[in-house]
Length: 148
Image (cartoon, rainbow, N blue to C red):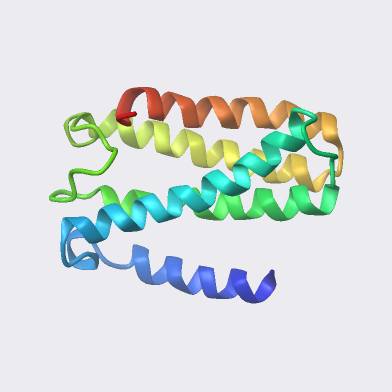
């Protein structure tokens, strides 16, 4: 996990150092990037949800590892929503309502940090308590800015 985290951190540094327009040669590149980041986030978030909802047994170590991936991935997709990157499953409102979009993305990132803290506690009840608000923060952005 630490080797992956170091690699991912380097990727994050490279991806946030440039404006979105310089990072992606075509809007399709930005769309693929953000969809990939959100897909990985969703896979790991789903594993936490399965534990929180009793669909799979709670595993404190796995919960912590998955929460850390979720929190890391939650920081990545936003650079790929820059000007000229419209399309994919994102509604046009992403670019028309930037302050709201940024507010919701920041809220989601903050909730994923809380999710990590809860997972690190090793306590299923704390994970459940943090999972709900994190899930709601994802849903609020999907409701406003994602085509189904």
